[in-house]
Image (cartoon, rainbow, N blue to C red; front, side, top):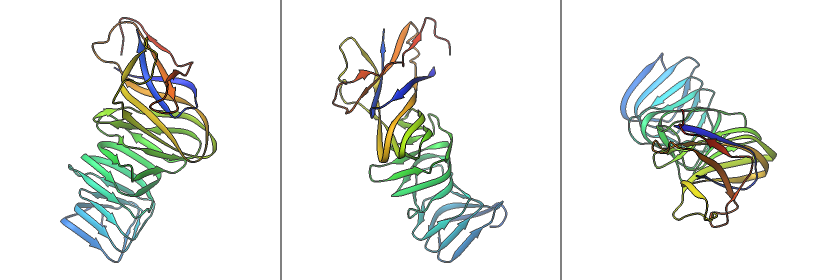
Length: 275
């Protein structure tokens, strides 16, 4: 049973859950294509590529580009169109720090982001895991929306949002989905990153408290200032756990520090639990 727990305001960067008792629709089939000139994809046109794509020239994408292989842009990419990774295997994306207006994930396997990939308007997660290493960044512009997010499509690694207000982080780890919503970020030009991790040892909580799982969420302020935000965390109740229990969120300033109950977060379930 998947549930959401909310709290009125957060300040600390770490959180855990505990319980207590070109051409119209054109398709190109090739292992690899390299563009060294100017490529213009007008609005309403779909370009489907079954293979890898290398851009050494200029791309103006106002339509829809679908690719099953790796994307490697070493020059200029721009436009208000969509780029969809729909391969049924692992894919990688390098876009030379150029922004993608509408970025879509709709293919099985891991989708590896290399370097900085800005997304200026929309991120859509349907099928496939987006992998972000510590060296790389997937960064959504202020006002960009996110569609989807599930156990079969989420961001594994850090997801970064620009700006204040509501921010959704469809993040997960090792096959599990742990979404987070920061409901109203306040601060001065905040750039906020969220990532979920798995604990290697019991966190520093009072002995009477049972950690809900080995998972903790980490928030980082990349630039600007983060004052506070209400928080909503997604979690799943184990099927065997069908009696009365309480859920709380605990916070800490570091993973090795002491975790304490935030307050105004408690959710109570009574037997039997209904979905």
